[in-house]
Each structure stands twice: as structure tokens, then as C-alpha cells.
Image (cartoon, rainbow, N blue to C red):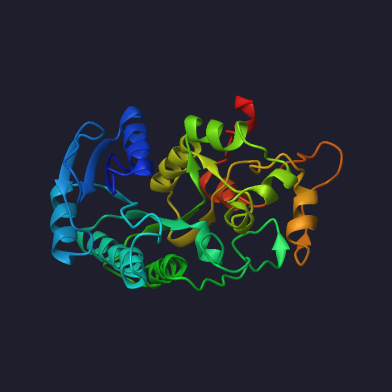
Length: 300
């Protein structure tokens, strides 16, 4: 099992949470980042331009890591040209996978995104066949950020087919919006999360296009740990979500009102969770023994 973990983009909001968590549970951590030098959240820091293949090889070799968590990509497409956003997702992931394989690092976890399905930042409405979505659902991305996330997953498929010089275990984690207590309190608890309130929100399109999905940083961190401890061979994709939606409207009603074209397959009988997520994370439970536990409603 890994003892030392390199985390790219460890200066970012999610990266900071991941480094702090991994350090707390006993891993040696190395932050590979291009930004300001910050050793407060990790055991070591190596300045790394993830779009420069030599930097990635050199930094990963110097880190002496057993596993890599690749978070160091452009977080949103709002402030960069499309080709830069796409390049950040795709080429940084390729460099990490290639360097890990050549250097004998057996485990790589990649930050994919909910956007890979063709939601999130898409200008048009998300295309859905059924709900809750799972890993078999088709992907229809069209914007540079989302296409880049899908492409990094395809690259991971290719590395997994190699008979040599490739990581043994690769996970693509399709993260939704990651929140901490403060963000959850501001965005969920203090806002009108009914269907009417969502419709009146300036962020309605985005929330609709992300299935009112989110995950708390604590659950995101335990999933990362599960991914670097995984022992399956090859590449697997995993949807990530909290156990509930961010809405105060029951999920069956959300599906009927916001996604009438989708076949709703969620449980509706006695004992079922009326606010269950519209994102199915059972594959992560089966292969990684991970199950989300944090709900924003516990702050209310």
C-alpha cells in the first residue's frame, strides 16, 4: 500500500483539503504545484509546471512517491481561452500518467469532473437518458473544459491497455462541486432550495445542469484515500456525489419537473430517502468500499 503520495495542485482549494487529510491519516505528502511555495499542508513542496513534461518527470522522480493524485488542472473555464483549458486537462494528465508509468508509480488518481457527461458549464441543457446517472450513461460534452475531462479518461483507458510502463491502477473521479461547511451553509442552508427558489436563482441553469449535485470535502478526501489504496488492475471511472441533492424538493419531483425526458429509476417506496442524489455512487462503494456520509441538511 502507498506510504508517500504526490498531490498535484496542492495549493488549490480541494488540493489543500486532500493534503491536510492525507497528512493527518499518516501518509508522507508532496505538493507538486506551480504557484506560491506552500509547505504548511504537506511534508515537501516541489515547484512543477504540469504542462512541461520534463518538470513532471523530474518532480515525480524527486518526490519518491508511491501514488499520484492529479488535481492540478484549471478548475473552471471562465477565465482562460478554450485551448488553454483543454490543454490543462488533457496534457497535464497525459504527462502524469506517462511519468508515473516510466518511473514505476503504480497508482494514479485523476480529477475528472461531473462536466464530462456534458453538464456543468454547457450553455445548453444537459442530455439525460435516465436518472440517477451511473457510469454507463453516455457522455455528450461540447465545451473545452468538459471535452478535456472526457479526453483525460480516454487517455487513461489507453495507458491501462499497455503491457508495460503504465500505472497498474488508475481511477478517474468525476467530482461535482466540492464544498466545505462554510460554503454549504452559505449556498444551501441560507438560501431557498425549494424548486421555486432554484428557478428564481441566477444560478438555476448551472444547478439544473449539475443535477443539484455536490460533495463535501471530507467525503472527497476519503474517496481519494480509497482510490490510492485500490488494488484493481486497469482504469475505472467513478461518479462522486453526496448522498443527497442540494435541493429541498424531493428527488422524484425534481426529476419530473426539471428532467422530464429522463427515465427516473430512483427508489420511491417506504424507507427510501426522498432527497437521494441523482448521481449513483454505488460503483465506488462496490470497488473502493467508499460511501458518502455528509449531508448539508445536518447544518440546518
